[in-house]
Image (tube, rainbow, N blue to C red):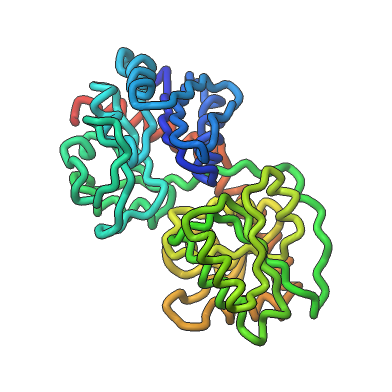
Length: 367
């Protein structure tokens, strides 16, 4: 029987993953188990530790503190399970000794792409390729992906043969914010929630919105922490004349989203796309590519628009479709919220993680 779940997290930014970890911890605390969260804030731009209701939080600021916290919270108990990530899985397996580790893939693994993981020997966050990670340690963890796309990519990690899919749970307010109806011919208000980093592919949206037949019909606002691509994106906006504004990180996202007609997430590498569900909570449909987790989170024509990523001009075509059909957008937004409430709710997510932890504890002797 599980008595304690220990969640470990290294925060390097203020993003959707940080919110999802905090919400998972809070939802697990309602499942009849003790929940403890070890939160390593790595860097000044990282999110500080949250305070989820019913959760014991230990914020650490370095490797020694992290190792000590995980060891004290989990390794001396026979009825504990650690919920980790690919970034800390190998280290957590060593620190926790016989305590089972459920490792969560919060993104999509590519065999040739660099991952930033915690070196279990030095405690440094190191850039490595998936094939360089320690297979004997990764094998000992039980793997979960936050989408089918993420879970399927676990095969690129050495020693990992399969992963269970557990969609993120996202808190959705009981009432959607009031929104003004968009009349035909009005400028399409596009919301984007993303850090300005290369893999988010925000340049695709800049180019699409700068098309001559679109630049006066749409307006794009990007909410998110400035990243390594911020300067180049600002220059691209100046060069193309795209109607794009970078707002930066905001704490009143729900209120600001209420002003958007549609959410766009152009990245082909999203492991889940929490921003899509944040938008759905406000009755806002989404436009996403047909790769990554996009087609899992958005149903084309029902909760948004899914465009063929490989086809040139397909994102611009999706924006044009959205401009021409405001009533269709409103309908899709309502369906998106209903689906989000049913499928992407925190209690469903927590129950599935509790089941995965129970299975990991039962299988402890087999690994």
